[in-house]
Image (tube, rainbow, N blue to C red):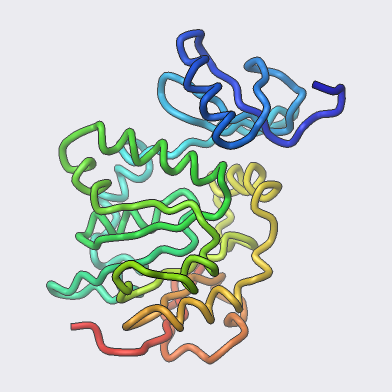
Length: 261
């Protein structure tokens, strides 16, 4: 290890977790450092409560982890408005209609979890390996939790891949709806998202390939593509959307191909 900091390293938060931390580091091809080390900008921490990502700067926010069992997502599942939520309307949920969905920009899986909680089968693609590792860890813990959360997680399948390449070479069942939410620049100014932005932007960079992502989605989806955008942002370069849904800070541009029934 040199004296110059690396971007990301793996650490473990208790001795019995050294072996899984070492295995994760090997899988992600990352170095291993002691917990609390400042020799990396970000530490991917293996703890008893799952995987988390922690910045090491003096003014760093708290660690980010994926938790489908408790916290904000549990509250949203119980009290978030069900099929009346904008994401549900955008992908075409109504009555008994529950389309198969490909979430091609999964991030931390929040929108995918909402759709799966409402009965959709959702395939998630996340191209950034560290974000995908956080998401897979959250899904595993949800499946182990049992009950309703495990049933929801069973409807979510994660692929770690470049979405444009994956959609161009798709061999599985064709998704009826593709959901896109290019992560950066993000429209939500909440403290939670600001914290995630500080951690993830150095990893994921800017989504400069959004037009290619949209084109690949339009080629693959059988019924519609729903694109989440900042409310006042222009549409992604390409064909104009056929409909829009607007909320307080964001909107959905909807590209219809066929009626969902």
